[in-house]
Image 1 (cartoon, rainbow, N blue to C red):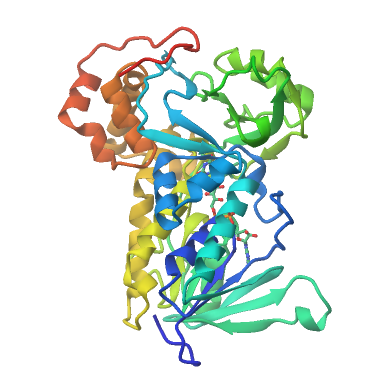
Image 2 (tube, rainbow, N blue to C red; image 1 turned 135 degrees about the vertical axis):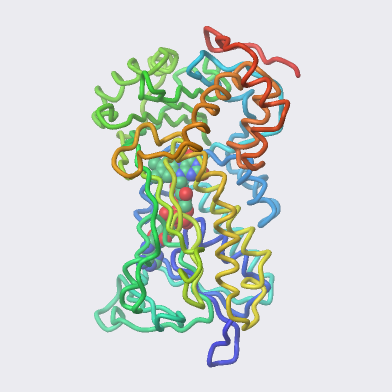
Length: 468
Ligand SMILES: Cc1cc2nc3c(=O)[nH]c(=O)nc-3n(C[C@H](O)[C@H](O)[C@H](O)COP(=O)(O)OP(=O)(O)OC[C@H]3O[C@@H](n4cnc5c(N)ncnc54)[C@H](O)[C@@H]3O)c2cc1C
């Protein structure tokens, strides 16, 4: 990492959300100072804030992300559980309606996921990341209510950022520059780095998008009789014949989040009556029945920008020295696959293993870290765009022969995974981001997927857990 003029090794993180705090963790102990610039002022307690609008919606942390989070910040899973996060093992604790019927509940225990609201998750991670840094030689400063409005430097090297305070007296709100040896963009899906490139005299990075046009609508509920409510989540994803879905999961404080989703022409309504009526039109009536015995606690919140978008900062020449892009700022996913937070954690873990985190002025260290971040996103990207391509229009809809073959195989595999423990385990390893896609084409999985006849899954939500 380039040395700052004061002789120290300095890093600056744009955005103090999940990826930003995990970037702090990846750099802790390796650099002298990290400055986090966060547009919002953090709320007191574990409350919703404006800078993370998606936080109103259901968020599941997959086992791949959970392992990465725990490796970065040991003890965080226990702290989240203490804060009320629910541990849901897949497939045992998430009743899932696949296109072929209900998935069998194998007692597999390979994939523990966490179900918790984002305000709680973000607050716990932030507290622990800052506490870990406080016990290290790295000094961390967080500038709240301060916005990054541009990058400084030139086409070859980023040397810092331009910032502006968002509140305070007019003088305090004047624009100023903050120099840094390494700038990490963790500003989320609204990142302006591609636009800021123009001011540096660089072309924007290449961008790939596949947009299924999915919209979300979410409302928090509480079962009228908690003892009568299932102790597990319910997932009825949309499918080609019925592209409307519902996911109803327990979170902290005995509450349940219900998120409805639908592609173009099937967007879930955000008025209460329409929202409830929509639950009767998804692929199975079970969620609708459960809702009749639950009380709504919040208004319905909608969300529409669910495009899969990947900016190719890792490609040769796409990144100036001194810049790294992490989390949604580099790659966003259709949220229905529950991958974004896990990819942010896997990316931060990958950064921690590179020379960029360990400092050192060698040219190319940020580019090397960016390639590691990109590799950490590959499996999630392939899974999301493969599944979404049939719904996308325009350029994003054109798939090559390889991808079409992949989609055919994956369709068949998904059906098999619902009833077959061997295929199911491989499927979950990949979608939970603990194994690469090659796991889906091992001889055993391939033979069971292609040669065994298609069979229906279960006709109703299974009450019984099946031992392996
Ligand atoms: C509806 C929905 C549901 C989702 N469900 C899941 C799920 O189930 N599981 C899952 O793993 N992922 C899910 N995701 C994805 C997940 O929300 C993101 O992947 C995750 O929040 C990425 O973290 P981040 O830190 O990159 O961005 P964010 O969490 O969005 O944080 C960005 C931060 O940067 C700050 N910021 C922005 N611009 C500036 C600036 N110019 N200057 C200073 N600060 C700035 C913001 O205030 C914010 O604090 C979902 C996404 C959506 C949209």
